Image (cartoon, rainbow, N blue to C red; front, top):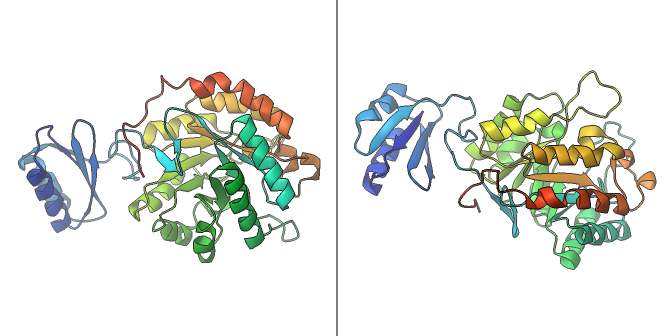
Length: 344
C-alpha cells in the first residue's frame, strides 16, 4: 500500500503515518519528492489499518501497489533514481559507457585497455576477476591478483571499477578494490547473495538472467532495495530464445519496459546481448534510442587472443568507432526524464 501525503503535510503528520504503518506490521519506506512525500507500507501486515489512514491528517489518499515489486516500482518512487559511483552518475544527464575486458588476463592487458577506453570516452572500467564459466576447464579468472591489477588501473586512469561477485564469501574482499559490484546473469536469483549485497554500501549492477522475465528481474532488484541498498542499476544482457545465430537475443523492449515500470537506471550490454562484434555498434545505438542510461561493452587489445568472450569483444579501434557513433546520443538526453536528486 502507498500513502500519498498532501503537499501541505507537516513533519508531525508524516511521522504519525510512519508510526501507524509500523504498528500495522509493515515496514515504512519514505520517498520525499519535490512536491510531496510518499510513504510505502511494504511487507505483510494488517491491510485494513493502512486503508484507514485515508482519513488521517495530512493524507491525500491511500492506494494499492499494482506490482509485486514494491520499492522498485515507480508508484513508490515516481522520480528517477540516479546512482553515484565515485563521481559517475548512472541515470543522470549523460549516457554512461562502461568498458573493458571480459576477464583480467594480465597487468599489461588491463592497463593497456584501461587507458584506451578512457581515451575513447568511457566513464568506468569493467574487468572480471572471478569468472563463472559453463565449463570447469575454461579460464576462471586471476582472483586476488586481478583485483590488485584493477586497483592499479583505477589509480592510473581514475576510472571507477566494476567487477563481478560470485559468492557471499568474496564480497568484502572485492569491495576493497571495486567501486561497483556486478551480479552476473547466472546469479540473478541467487537470493542468499542478493540478501548479503543488500547490506553492502557498494552500488550493485544487476544483470538480467538468460531465462528471466522482466518481472523476475525487478523482483531480484527488490531483494536489494528491501534489504537497504537502494543504489541498484539494472542491466539487460540478452535472453535465450530459439535464435541460433546470436549468443543471446537482446531484448530492446525490456530496456524500455524496465524504465516504464521502475525508477532504477537501466544499462544495456550489447556484447553479451548479441555475442557478435558486428552487432555491438547498431545495438548500442538502438539501446540508447529506447532510453538506456548506459552501456557496458567488452574491449580487448587483441580479441582473437582473449581467454574469454573474444568473438564479442571489440579491439581499441572498434571501440573508438562505436564511441564516435554514439557521440550525439551521449549528449542528447534532454528528452529523457531524470531524477531531481541523486541517491548516494
